[in-house]
Length: 296
Ligand SMILES: Cc1cc2nc3c(=O)[nH]c(=O)nc-3n(C[C@H](O)[C@H](O)[C@H](O)COP(=O)(O)O)c2cc1C
Image 1 (tube, rainbow, N blue to C red):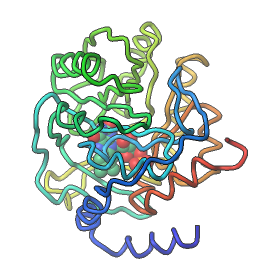
Image 2 (spheres, rainbow, N blue to C red):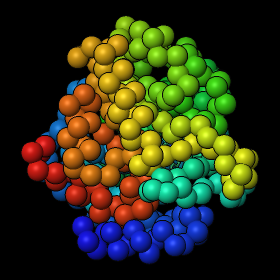
Image 3 (cartoon, protein in one colour):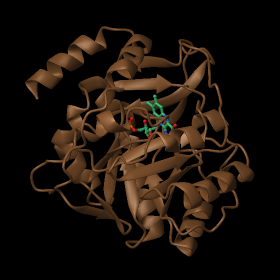
Image 4 (tube, rainbow, N blue to C red):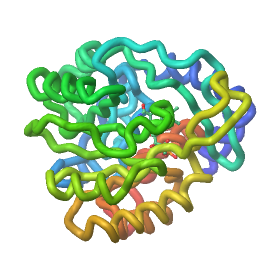
């Protein structure tokens, strides 16, 4: 842990756009996957542990092999779109103290077919996160996944700040025989989405980033992630668990860095995801979180 703290301090002093690009080269190394030893389950989906990699770290599938080496519970790849989308111009990421980030990547994607082509033969539980600017975008991708890839589960991202409030409610989704988790955020109309999720037997991911203004970002605004989100994320988790009851599977996402946080979160959620802690403290965080005592 002391080494990770030291690495975190060094990384803290490099511009986040530069660490992001350096990380892109390093994260493309095709390391062998960790042996999936810890058995975990969320909504009937078998994973290698309680903590997965959240959507957005590997938007293209290019880092999945590297990340699987660090024994995550599962990998969420994406968010994807049906076709290529450029995303926003840099600067798209800025650091916020303590241990937080604002990002506005702009839902950049090479398109779902290219992403999925990189995941063949990976041998690790992969969730695909799909994004969309129309109901048809979601429809096309769900059908594509059902026919051509069959991930362990699908996350439907309706809560990216890039949408600027487009999806407060759910778009009409096609009924596919894949486990579905709806990723909600602070702008989501909770009662409506919760009702739909319960009716359809879908799980939820709570929460996405929190929309904030930041003049360092090219588009002047973005989503806040990391430690600053944790307190509000856990509050939202409590509210959602109260609304859905005990049976709906929930994956928690938002500022997860430590085992004591994970213990708190797993009282209400069935699994969790991390992203910003990986950027601050390297993917070894995944190994530590998935081996927390009293949990696994
Ligand atoms: C650089 C970056 C890119 C992200 N991209 C996506 C995305 O494409 N889809 C999505 O659902 N969430 C995305 N997120 C949100 C994360 O998946 C996660 O929900 C959020 O960052 C809170 O978790 P954290 O505090 O552990 O980072 C992104 C977050 C960051 C920091």
